[in-house]
Amino acid sequence: MPEPARGAALPAFFEFSAPAAWRAVDFISDLHLCEAMPATFKAWERHLRQTTADAVFILGDLFEVWVGDDARHRPFERRCVDVLADAASHRKVAFMAGNRDFLVGAALLRDAGLMALPDPTVLSAWGQPVLLSHGDALCLADTPYQAFRREVRTPAWQAGFLARPLPERLALATEMRRASAEHWRAQNAAGTGRFGLDGDAAADVDAAEAVRWMHALGAAEMVHGHTHRPGSNLLAPGFKRHVLSDWDLDTAQRAEVLRLTRRGFERLPPAGR
Ligand code: MN
Image 1 (cartoon, rainbow, N blue to C red):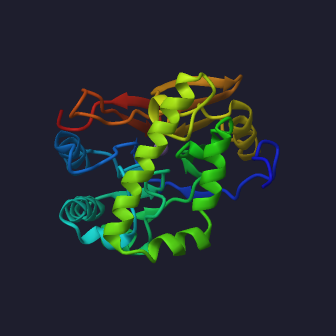
Image 2 (image 1 turned 90 degrees about the vertical axis):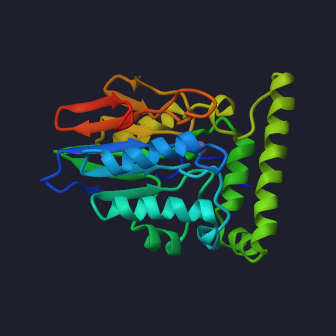
């Protein structure tokens, strides 16, 4: 297995140019939507319906888990699809996969009216290129997670997983998250490392690699989620990154939108709150 990734070939960057008439783009990520988090779902639904932005870019981990597009017909997932499709009939809604929902496929994108954003993507808006990524691919210090990520992103692994019955996939996903959390707790107790979880358990993005990507693109700013450590800071002189907040309005009071306009980035509460 080759070592990841720093100094390796640059990834292919998808490019999207914002139409000149756009005035604002909202970035959100790490909603981790699930039936057990109704207040978070409600706030997300309200934001998608009420935001004044021309576009909402969802940068990964919209869903707590996505085990295949046949899940879109289950009751909770159906409600999510309806919210997305309604929003997409009024504004552009774009979706980049995260580590929880990398199995989102063409059927969900179609039914929900989503524009697919490969990771990484370069958004050109008002003359400025901005690098967009979920963030997990840049957490190079977490080598066990990077190995896991490479495996589950292969067509062979995905075909094997998707061939299993839906209830089995849902049970497997629950078990994988439980095992991953336990592994992390054990590693963390021993002070030896981390294992590819989001939030507190996530490694940070590798600053040198992120700057290398930005430098290659001529992008002075990037937006990512995944680490659940919202804030904006310089990774190197002239290279600024904006980290998105996760959303939890059920066990906490945390939800934030990062908005880009001609004047730059600003952080806002969700619309209607
Ligand atoms: Mn994530």
